[in-house]
Amino acid sequence: MSENNPSAMDYAEHEKTYAGFIAFSKIGAITSINVVLCLLIFGLGSGYSILAGWVALLATIVAAVIGCALGQKGWIPSAYAFGLAGLLAVLTVA
Image (tube, rainbow, N blue to C red; front, side):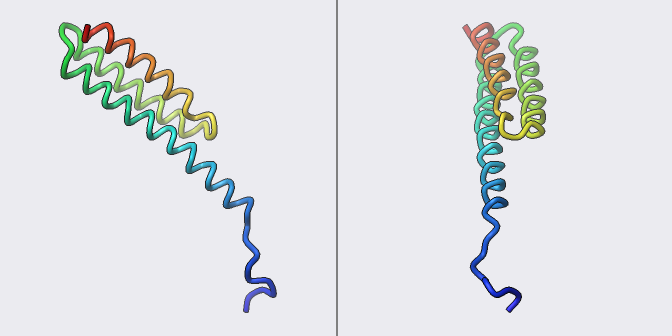
């Protein structure tokens, strides 16, 4: 046996890993919704929809990278990118 108490676990490290998983899941979910919104802009838009779709997609990628670096509050840049993509979708699809 390596220790006298084999059931001792590092709960602090487990909680830190779980918090990171939840933060990454939030970023991933919002980014996936943004990509679908970008596809909507590309597919249904007219006029400047190609440009608007690329701007929204680039903003989504940049926001996801920044969000991964921020940690717990990492979903906020992706939410701003979602707002931008939503605005561009309303302007180009309508």
